[in-house]
Length: 263
Image (tube, rainbow, N blue to C red; front, side, top):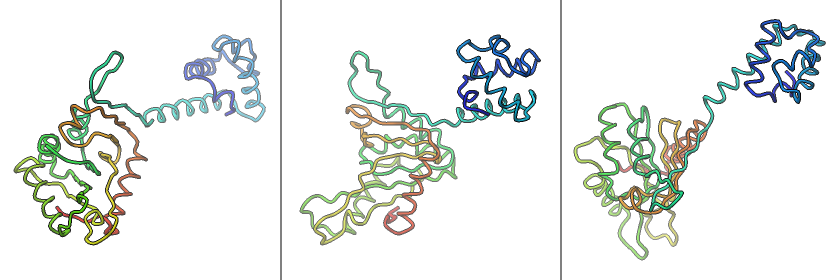
């Protein structure tokens, strides 16, 4: 297959394929023949490309097969092509069509099949935000849900790290997750609450990964304001490559015990 054929649109390739299959286009593939299915601008270059393939021993049925394979490959590529949707929240203005962050998050949770990973978001009013996820976990007992959350230590706070973790755990279980529902696994970075260190780290990454296929990255925290009222921007991305890379990254942190499980 030459570059001139690869550059053809799907419509031109199908027209060329039809001409070859029907016998309307035959060797030596003149420009006149090709002008029946192609524009004058492309007939000349395609004529040269087909003549070259013919000289190399490819018959019309072999060229047809090559074109069929090219079309099939393009179809597969389109079916798996990454898609990116912009998700914005905030006040409406002329020319702005917001797609509520809470709606997108709820859709992602509701359609999860195998796994959900939530990383780094601040959580308030979580019992409302995570209602759809908790219900999905009840409907699908094998759904694996893991949270990697930040535990913030206020400046100047001298509370022991184990007390801060226990408080966070109790708050999450009692007020931030729908009552009576199966809990997710929850991990945290122990450096964020470490005792007697001059500078602490923060789990500041913010993303959601669904089924190792969908990635949602957003500035909107899991709060009522972040999900409904604030001006927020997010990207809803379908990319298995990106989803798998993100999942692997945090699982490696977990496996290296750089993230510690609290629930």
